Structure formats: structure tokens, C-alpha cells
Image (cartoon, rainbow, N blue to C red):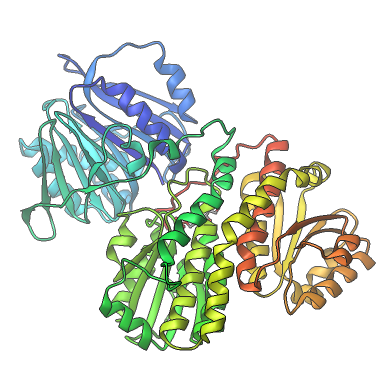
Length: 614
Ligand code: M6R
């Protein structure tokens, strides 16, 4: 949450900062701001605005400032309401330091009290200004900003990252990371720093991911990193990012979410091509021999994740139990991290995350490692903290996902987890060769099925049009499509703000049936399954109570088609693969309803793409 960008070099800093903030805006959009040091001037140029970046851009239109050093920020409010005064960058009380911050300074109230007693005045309600003033206080005592930051961060509690500079040294940016991500972009006679690589892609692909407790000194010519952990200057290896710049643009689509939904067949094709070898075996290039052996011997699996990734974990868990025959449980990260999990070295903990930075999932990973479990991260963002800290990582290769509502990252997680389950079944010899071959043959067809669904998806538009003004929706599913019901409901509520509830269809009679009336649509995920008859009975029960039935079923299921008020079909596949297909019409349904309600699809209220605070 919150996006940070910093630049130092020969270019005009302001356009670089604004372009960077455009890429980072998905991380928070309560306010935006930049601070830079105008050429040959001794005063900061600071401009901030409440609301989206567009408001800041409009305000910037009136100014012409030549600067080659600057920082920018897009905010997801934690301490203090969204307002101009609470927007970053913040300037310390002495007017010498400009600072942006991502994360939370937990002891800010105590520190603020101390600083106020020393006569310091605060303008905002933020924890960030406390950080700026504490650094300012130390800077007053030591002539070097680097030393001042080092002293200050040792007094700050919590998890955060900072980027700052002083007007007294126009040649240097300072950055500090504790948990929240920062990546340095390396250029020729210029350098960059940002919360994630998408902001750097237009300028460079050579990056250095900072590690926890790294304090970086960045000039136009060089980058030096001091580790506060080892108390020494360190060399961090740079890596090359191979994401395509175009992937982080809308490419003619009205919204990133829609574009990302349409990218799903290609993403799935990439995953399958990478993971399935010519001989039909599954291969994970990033798993060492040692880790593969561990996978053979583990006795229990836990899938830990948040939001959409949690739903992917629910499907993955069903597949692991069904095929690899290992007991597997699924938990949301925030519950896991504060629970009394009984993990030991016979456990495998699978952390599923698009961003690789989710605070609760990261804490869960650290907890699992501390207990001696083997940890495997299923991550989209290459080089992210969780990817780097887990014992092993499998990347989902979905490319940059900008829309806050996860779509392609979800189906990529599903495909990856299913392949992992089949792979574990194979190495543990819990699947017959013929069954394995059949699953591989069928999963290879998934991208083309996905493409077919997307080709026909417009048919579903009339259904969204019929129901877009309704405020309550119920989603029902069974087995591996119960998670689809949860995911469909999450998609709808997060972008349309309608109330949507996902439920296991078999639980309907234990309560939710009381909700059935002629006003609340019930979306029933009823693709082919050994429980389809049960699902049909549930649908009959809904109809008998005058309910509105929207069914997602398998092609050719005439009975279901007749029974439902609206029906959308997906191709026939083995049941375990069906969640990849059945979710697509639900993504589209949520998208359409949100658009028809005039919602901000890519940046829904109160949300941020990457939840780096708990
Ligand atoms: O980056 P992560 O996968 O760890 O994020 C987890 C959730 O925050 C995320 O899936 C969230 O629920 C999405 N907005 C759902 O569309």
C-alpha cells in the first residue's frame, strides 16, 4: 500500500516521477504528491493533492520546474484522513528534508509526544511526519543525512520503507527498507527507486531489490548499500526484469481488469508450455533436487494466503488431497500468523501471493520457517520479498496485474497449483500413469477453452444488464467450485460495492435459504461434477421459492439451461480443472455490473492492490 518513486539523474525529474506514480497508483489513490529540488534553487518544490493522481497532474499543469532530483508518492491512508496536508512527501520541521514513506511507524504517537515536548510543531496527523522530524532532529546533530537516518530508524518501530533527500545535498537520494518493498533501477548517469518494477520499466530493466535493513545511498553515478543487519557495506546482485512494458498498459481496453481477463488464455498457455515438458512430465525449473526430495517426504501441507489467493489455495488443497493423497489445510494468512499452528519439519507450507508482498502472508512465511516447515511460495512478482524469503519459489508468470481486482493472477495461481498437485502425485506415486496422462492432455486444452469462453462472453452482458441495480447476490458452488463461488462474490463486492456472499451449496438449507426471494439473484456454479445432481436439487429449491437463478454449467446441459433464468456454458473438462473456466464468466459479470454502476473498476474505493500493512 502506498507507492514510492525517486529519481536522480539528467532527465527532467517531474515527468519521471509522474509517469512512475501512474504505474504505482494501483497501490493507493487517496492522495498523490511530489517533492523535488529545482535546479540551482535552495528551496524544495512540493506539490500534493488529495485524491487520484489526475488531480495532482491537473495542479502541476500550471508549473514549470526544472529539477533532476525528486521523490513522489501515491497514498493509501493509514494514519490521518486522505487530505492534502496528510499527503506525502512530508518536510521536516527545519525545512531541510523531504521524505516519502510506505508502511506504518508503530510507535509514532510516543515519538510525536517526545518531539512535541522539544517544541516541534506538526502539520499533519501522519506517522510519516514523525519519521521526517525524527530524522530531522538527528540531522541537526550530525552533518550526514545517512547517519541521521541510521540513528532514526533504530528508534522507529514497525514495518516500512522510506525514500528521502535533503536540500543541502542535491546529489543524493537515501532509501531505507524494512519489510516494505523497494527496488532500485540502474541507469546510465541516472538511477531510480520505486516500490515496484513496473514504474522503472520505461527506463531500465536492470534492478536491485533491496533487502530488509538495507540503507541505500543513490547518486546519479552510483548506488552504495549499507546493511544495518551486518553493519557493513554490501554488494547486492542486480537482476534483469523481462516483463514487457506494453503489458503494464491498457492497450486500447477501457480498463486494466478487462484487458487482464482477456490475457488469460495467453497466460495459461505460457504456464503450461513452461511446466509441461515434451515427454508430458511436469517440471518446475526453480525447485532444487533437495526440495523435490522434501516434497516426496512431507506429511502435511498448509496453503496460506489472502483474498483471491486464498480461494486459489482452497482449490489447490482439494487437488493435493485428491491426487497427492496428503492431508492439506487452507488458512487465511492473518488467522494463521496469530494461531498456534503445530508445524514441524514434516510440513510443507505453500504461500500463495500475486504481489509477493502481502504483510500477513509474509509474516506467515516467517512463522512457518521459524517452526522448521519447508516453505514454497507461489508468486507472480519476480524478486518480491516472499519469493526471495521462501525456501523455494514457483512463479506464476501472469505478467503485471494492475487492476486491483485479481483476474489473470488467479487463474495463473489455479493452473500452477493444479500442476503442483499432479506433480506431487507423480513423484509420490499416488496417481496411475494413465490418469496422469489424461489430466495433462486435458489441462493442455484449457487455454483454448478459456479463449472460447471469452469469445462468447458478450452473451452474458444482458444478464448483467438485467441485474446491475440489485444490491444483494448469493453465489453457490460445491467441491472445487465452492471456492469459485467465494471468488465470484469477492469480485462483485470489491468492484461494484454490491453485497455478495459466497456459500457452499450444501449449506444453503442451514441458513442462507432464508434469503431466497424474487429479488436476490443466486449465481449457481453447476458445471459437470459427481455432485451435479445435488446442485440441481439446490437449484430446484431456489426456484420453488421464487428465486432468480443464474447458472454457470457445462455445455449441452439442457436440463440446467431450462431451469435457469440465465445460463452461461463452459466447455466440458475434468472437474478439478473446471474452476479455471467457471470463474471467467463471474469475472465478466462483476466487471459489467461495476461498469453499469459507474464504479471505478481498476481502483475501487478503500482498496489497494498490494496490502503491505496488516
Ligand atoms: O498479492 P496477494 O495475492 O497476496 O494479494 C492478496 C489479496 O489482497 C488479493 O487477492 C485481493 O483479495 C484482491 N483484490 C482480490 O481481487
